[in-house]
Length: 203
Image (cartoon, rainbow, N blue to C red; front, top):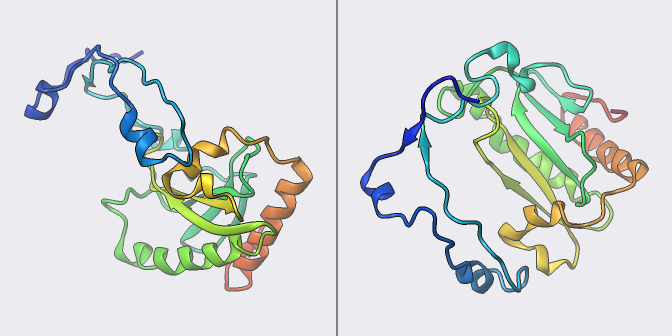
């Protein structure tokens, strides 16, 4: 629980919101009809500030991304790629983050300059996994005060999972067997290492 008293956020945007009401989710079912037949939203909760600090935001020693991880499958001098501890429902899902404690807003330009080429390499590596058609990337900036992205593999032929719907399917599809997850990690790690850096496929 926060030690700082939280109060409702105030802005012209916030003042027009129907806090406490359950909003119509038709826009999602119409926008992603291949993924959803029906969605029921929870009532809109009060938006309180100041927000709870993210992991590593007030104490860098608590930043999980800065700590050496057994889940890392590849790294070079600047960047690292690692698997989640939980088994994924998708053929592959991994985090991509700088080895230094940076946010997107303050990362050195030389670090960010390597991100584009690395995303290209990751995309090609992920598509080497049997049964994968595409590699999508997502960035959700609420869990950790350390720049990180996610690489997600879309199964070939699974048009229900195209676009923004892919991340939802990761939690819905049956989790991969450990042996298959390890093999997919090996494929990606070794493909990345072929272009530089070091692979740790046996996570």
